[in-house]
Structure formats: C-alpha cells, structure tokens
Length: 73
Image 1 (cartoon, one colour):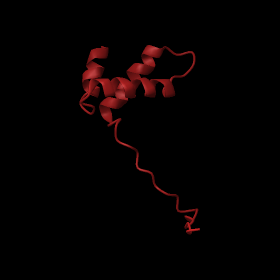
Image 2 (cartoon, helix red, strand yellow):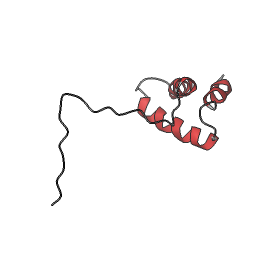
Image 3 (cartoon, rainbow, N blue to C red):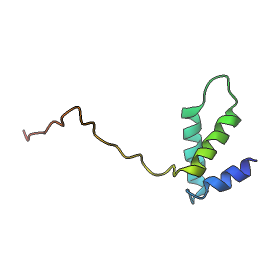
C-alpha cells in the first residue's frame, strides 16, 4: 500500500510537505513514457525509504582535469 511507503519515507523526511515536494520532483524526473505514473511514484517512495532524499550527493572533482585558479583583475 502507498500509505506504508509514505510512512517509510517519512523516516528520512520529517516534514510531509517537503516529502510531497521532493517526491513530485523526483517522479517528474524518473518517469518513463508508456509506464504508469503510480508505479513511478511508488518507486520514488521506496527509494526515499532507503536513502535520505534531502541530503545532497557529494560532488567529487575529477582527477583527470586540473582545476584552474582564478586571478583577480
């Protein structure tokens, strides 16, 4: 049931409004044509249950390209 998925996702997000906002954004990005929107929403809620959707993914600079230093004008 979807209510179980929502309560599971609330373990990482304490605010229900924020959960709805994050879930709608993620559903729009992950939805594939010719699939049901309900299935995509359920998949998003399952992902939110296992990971924290509010935490930003750590960005690691690539070691291949050197970082340019900026100089003052």
